Image (tube, rainbow, N blue to C red; front, side, top):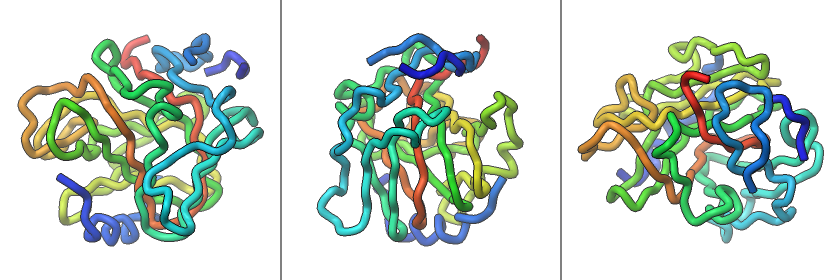
Length: 226
């Protein structure tokens, strides 16, 4: 157990991601991070080999390693040899076929980036046809719990795709509020056919980068006001 401290994307999206890549900036007890409502998975019991999509392509790797997580615990290590999208299998990532966010203000996870990294997220849901993409309401928080200036971290490409720019050595949190809008303005998620203002469930989380290695841990439900 860890220490208690804490629509379809096209090739154009990948190209935009490369351009933005270096523009920086089992339920467990909740760590001493007041924004975490509930830890969904701390990956302590997740097997080393974690299924992911697309798993047949040469190069990408998604595995769980000791010492790669929050405070040197167990976490997911992801390797992208180039601009690609990888989605950890939901039963391994969420500990369930889908992640219910209706009782929370969003989702959050810890991330460590040894080198500068541009990362983008999208998500599938049974609620909609096509994917949710992140909006400019995504939040970035350092490991001390200080919110960073999202306007400096989240960049918008010509096609509307957002990219989160993280500096080399960044350790902290990416937070996606479950707010929803058609164009992603002032919301965590965007969808062209948005008919409501909240995302209440996710069946997969898809992670884009232009290439690199990074670690993810402490997938949790986010609460805006502790």
